[in-house]
Length: 222
Image (tube, rainbow, N blue to C red; front, side, top):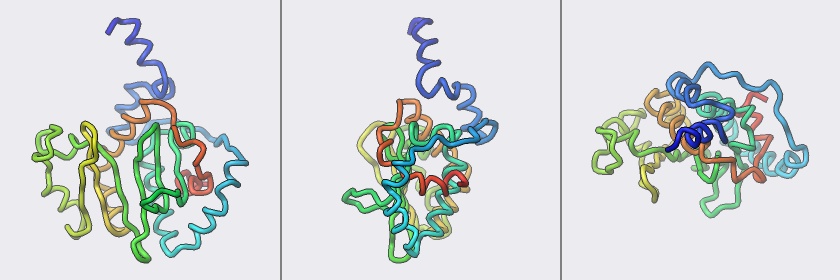
């Protein structure tokens, strides 16, 4: 790449908000970023999804779900207030065939989805496969299954799958406790941040019109 082109690519899009050096620092530590004090908000969009939010809030999973989203917003998204809606979004009871409760997206990619399982929860993360192989490759046969099974209290509470696409991996977890445990695990947390940065760097959020500000309140502390 020519120097001029390299310089332009490094100062465009998401990198205008967060340089590669700042991204690397956040990836490793999750700290050191100055977020916005105020949240730019569309009142029209907030009210558009208010009825869905009220329906979600009445579900038995609501308290556990909002707690998990608070952890995810705090630890897995860089400058979440500054980047809300335009770089990432959360949808409330989206009308897709898998019937999720909420889904966090950025660019054209799903990041994190929560579903009802009885009165409890199950969740799904989309990540890079290379963060979970024993040799850092994208070879499914090198998947570190021992680590995955030991990352939660009960091995039956975790599963995985291989979405189409290079270096793609999915983790499924059952129960709020298992999901919270994964979000507190350094290897998992770094993998989530790395995948999220990959797609934040690919461009603006394609799901801006389905953003639920009321759900995002729980991710951003109000």
